[in-house]
Image (cartoon, rainbow, N blue to C red; front, top):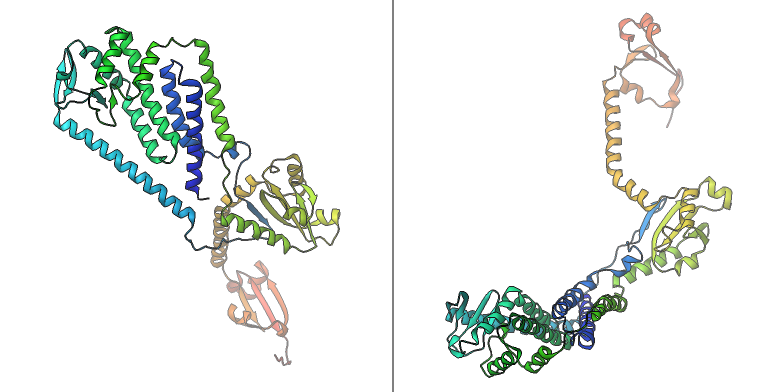
Length: 470
């Protein structure tokens, strides 16, 4: 399955799971602010958790490493030609659906912009809003309230404006936009549509409670005003509405007795419980073609090993068949058999292969084996590889400096059969023609050859009266 579809499967599964928890447990509780944060967490967690490698909490996933201590095996994955498949078609259908929903979202934003262009700034008893000429429901979007005061009695305006102030001050527009975007990206998931509706409904519960607490209207008068406003034309789809189709639920929640504080424990149990279920049920990624080919190639490498090789698996003696059948191989270390191995296992052993799995990399047996036989740890190997360029550069510089010193040293006097010659002539002599080579130093050289012998004298005598053939 392509990575995108696997990711969407995890995201939408978690959304359904969290919405089910809300519907079955939380929606009838009067902890509306907690419900708001629960729904926001549901979206954020669902989007983020598939990006976290859960297996990393249990074992460190590191690409298999070959620490070449005598032999190196190299694997180059072959490129495959992409072909059309049903998965490709399914991805195409998904993006078409996303495109349609995003275009719809942009159209709704454009409708809001037109309403703003047609409205005018106004205020009522110091409260800023924009006066709308059309006969639409009062609504707010972002930090702005839109209202047609001609449609309402003066006694209704305080409650209406108070309602929209709650939406504005608590940034409810951000919740609505997030829910709309989630719906667009997860359009095929009924849970995304139901979650968006739950978000908008819960925001209205929050504002209804704030209005009643302000004491501007009693509960019955406020509910009657909601019923009256439901007869007006709907406002923009993205706006925080003063009312909506689930008016019955709003009135029922206003009349509901406040939930006991003991029910707060449900949040402490439900949120981590659902998160753990989502993590536990997350489908594991299937191995890619390269990974499967690498596994096959690794098996073939073991097939090529001769019988003069000893295998150790996680520090314990093993054999080629057991190593080939071992999954999750992390490291393969190859070592030439030195005196310690030959003394312990016999002179016929030429090579040692230490195979380490993910689970056994830090096991006591592996550590003891490495320490006993001098196998590097991963950290030692990586440190050596990191330091190698600098070490090689230092060695090259040392060689260069030695060469420079040799070039700068004074050359001795070369005497061939009693006659002074150049160094090049001496170097061209065949060893079979040389009878003897003597070296004179210091006082011995200067006494015989004077100042010319101050750097030493090399006396070369060739074999006389003989002919040499190639």
